[in-house]
Amino acid sequence: TGLITLDPGYKNTGATKSAITFLDGEEGILRYRGYRIEDLAEKSTFLEVAYLLIYGELPTQSEYETFNIEITHHTLVHEDIKKILEGFPSNAHPMGVLSSLICSLTAFYPDSLNPNRSKEEIDLSIIRLLAKMPTFAAWAYKNEMGHPVNYPDNNLDYCGNFLKMMFALPAEKYEVDPIVSAALDKLLILHADHEQNCSTSTVRIVGSSQASIYASISAGINALWGPLHGGANQSVIEMLEAIKADGGDAKKYLDKAKDKNDSFRLMGFGHRVYKNFDPRAKIIKKAADDVLGKLGVKDPILEIAKELEYAALHDQYFIDRKLYPNVDFYSGIIYRALGIPTDMFTVMFALGRLPGWIAQWKEMRENNEPIGRPRQVYVGENERDYVSMNKR
Ligand code: CMC
Image 1: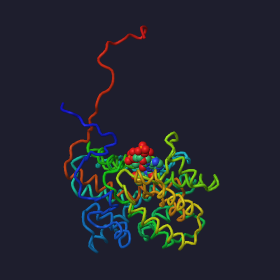
Image 2: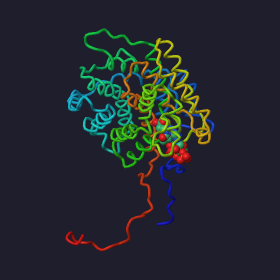
Image 3: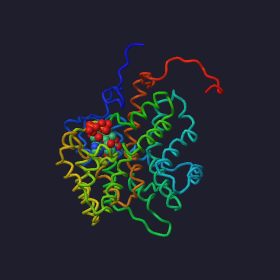
Image 4: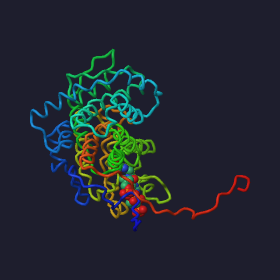
């Protein structure tokens, strides 16, 4: 069988060649298809970036319009999906609801189970995913609130439509705030891809068995849910709230994070690949100041976050281990200012990451990659004889 190299957590194992995202963790560089994340966050829109990730080039004006129109015309979901939604208790975490509803698309579009679909059929699935995910995400929230769901409004752009489905109430007039919508668009761009992270690798590995694209993306959502991955943005706010409730002593929590007998970690700090500033965190920190300023929101938690960041960046433990704030450290603060509830933060991350998952799934299938199947080193019992129940 040859020698098996053990690499728990795949810290040094490359699983694929990829032409989508370039990441240099030592230098803190991130590029999608060669374009700097800083430029895309500043100049592009989320749907432009989605097109870039999935199809490899920035869209021309007409390609962009077609893409936009197609997505807009698939935002509606089958009415029976509402029945699935209604079966969830109101305290269901929206990530579980989201992954279930995405997986249910395998039943509404069973052609997706066929591994030999044409390029056009796959493109239609891609459009459906991008179009319906905001509807599901907003509906998961509505179910939690006990509010009636809102149907998509095709007169609005991608983020505007999502915000209206999230926040409009039947008895009140709702206008999309352009500041909120622009901030959301930027956050989605920053989350759109991050090469072979846990959820993306999950999407690729599930897809490598030739499972449906919907089933693969649903699995990615579940992988993202964990607190060490996308769930960190929720954990960061919970941590900052706890520090505030405990008198606002950031130093005390820094010591807790350093204590090896304490399982507490500084959430939103550290990264498997970045051993320098996460470039996304830099952009988000600036955006947090910007958005809170424009919206006139004063959040004491932003001050605690900045104190904590400053203290950690000057602490030998964090310096030695090259632990810097990651994308999740400030994103939750902006989400809060936009009125997004804490348990929806990871859902927002999923909305942003969707084009990346799709692009990676598509690349994996186009490259005809073999089924993902890691090996192991067996450390269990040697061969032994069966002992009947009365002799145990
Ligand atoms: N607080 C305190 N100590 C830490 C932290 C932290 N946040 N992160 C890493 N360390 C320490 C860790 O204890 C270890 O110390 P030692 O060498 O003394 O044993 C050292 O730094 C290396 O950490 P590791 O756990 O071996 O690193 P990893 O690459 O396996 O883990 C990580 C990466 C992101 C899971 C980890 O840094 C972490 O748990 N961070 C907090 C959760 C978080 O913010 N996750 C979001 C990640 S970014 C976006 C995303 O992926 O969704």
